[in-house]
Picture (tube, one colour):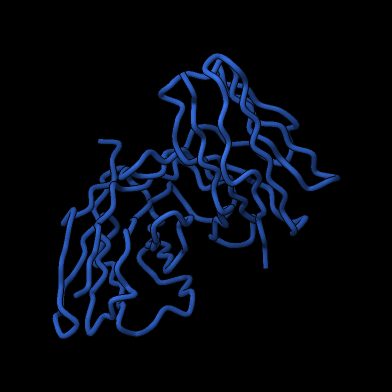
Length: 112
Length: 115
């Protein structure tokens, strides 16, 4: 089955700097890659997603890149703000079933 | 209405109790999911319902029993749970199953404590 590895497990960046979280997946049949943000005690919320026919997608300060050949995808947050502090999960999903497989998560701390 | 509503928000139950978790959405989504999330861990898929039929059961113990009475409602019946079942139980829904998981939305969860 699919396996998603996520790094780093913890990331601290100065406010205003950029943050990058990287994920790899194992099954080349995966074709959908969402990213979720989960604040303490709250639900995971979809912040951006990318389909396998696209290499990059951007939404304001957030961007995701996908390298299908290498089977890795990354989340980039620019001009980080205190409210970006949360746990971020990458995930992968295949077209032939209904599962979304999550990475282990990255705890992002934005330092003042 | 663009939300998935879960009740109760918190539940404490004994190991001999029977209780149910409820999930409701009115977005016309035809796929609904149950996840279990332990502290500092990612959500783990338990069950998937597609058009009110159970399509995936991730080898979940029988003390968890899902039910989908209609396209808007998903229940999780709990019986004879163990303390290690204490977790945040998340419901999610999407427009349809299969690729892309359009509109995949999580509820706020039920925090379950088994004593």
